[in-house]
Length: 222
Ligand code: AMP
Image (tube, rainbow, N blue to C red; front, side, top):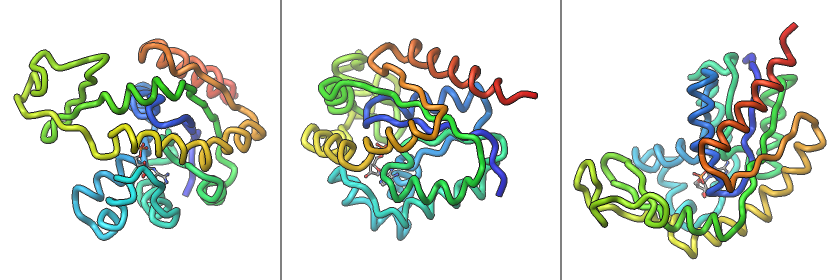
């Protein structure tokens, strides 16, 4: 398989990787690969992989590498990775990073590390409320529904995702520190690595991310 540019978004849960990846995919046309979204879809569809992953995700731990790698490969095969890829939530440990190296070969990498304080993560994630059918997301601290516990648009009762509960968020942060944070050095040493402050507004972070992508990727033009 041939790959275009590959942008890896690193950072703890709640840093805004998903939001930024979606925006960047829209502006660049790159394939957005979020292992969290792929896993949640597998859980919803009750596939074998989804059934194996559900309880692990609800505890805030990492799904086994071989299951996640299988999903990533399938997504690459179905999409058009030669257009470019944005990886969001993958890789999450050293073994996944090495597996990814094996698939990508010589593809050009750009890594953007979005940083954020732990307490901000807890507020962003444990404050999240979701309309189960429509998927609309609110935050009780930053963007509450005008209808309180009900969705402004659909009127559905809002719920808190199991893995958004505070004790699980703290567990996810621990797992991040132990498993994923070491990848910062792994990718920093490879060059084309940048830090972005994720504590700012979505628009400000998006601007910083897209400037980096434009700058780094335009350097590749002949
Ligand atoms: P996310 O939406 O990226 O925070 O992912 C939600 C949950 O899915 C995580 O807490 C993990 O349980 C699981 N997950 C997502 N991506 C991975 C990955 N690359 N490796 C292992 N587990 C993952």
